[in-house]
Image (cartoon, rainbow, N blue to C red; front, side):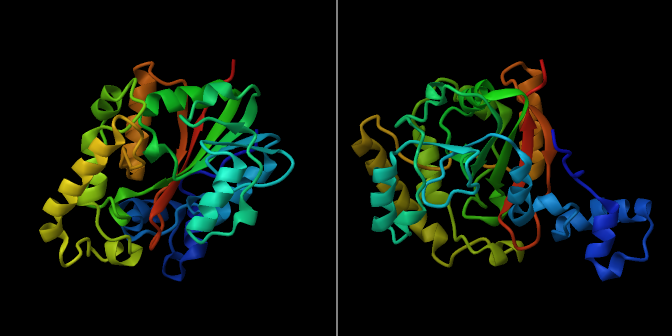
Length: 290
């Protein structure tokens, strides 16, 4: 198994910022905890997808979940799982202005996201902006563990709710996630939150503390009414929204708690902090060796 970079690398940190190069390792680490994380300074090269994704090239077999028209990993050692077939994904890509030629061949298709149909085991699973859409996150994480070989890793790119349109929605708790066990579609609360309480998606504005559109609060009631109609029209069917909102710290805490409670088989190996002007963080969960 290739060695992951630490969540904080003092040498990398000092070299990345001229104003910190005079610091010794201990002082640099203290600075990162006191100021660097809040300022979005990179504590590790793997904190951004531009470095995180290439790191996966050393894995011998990878399953990517939900590649759509933008697979994050490619190559003969990569297989794909999605809720739509390649033809359906291409048609969807054309409808929304994406390049249909970027849609890869999908090896396993399940309209309900059932990973149990995957009949192979992999050294790595990867997903980008996927876990927040899972109606039953515990089931998803258990299914990922089932398709991983012992010692395998789940590599994730996860939106940081503080710096995207989820900024006004509370962080998800362990209790929220446990309560959702058995769900196959999103509950009404998630649909209302996503449709009525989300805000702009300008990452730079969020980093500057500007989370509100001018008409946000005036639009909440009509958006809520529209969400209610959408939920009722779905008649028990799936409505695609964010069910879960995380920061790096809350993601670590929730995943660790779920494992301690015996609800998931994956352990937290790394959670890297969000970089300045980014709206996502990277994380690695590991399936313990047998």
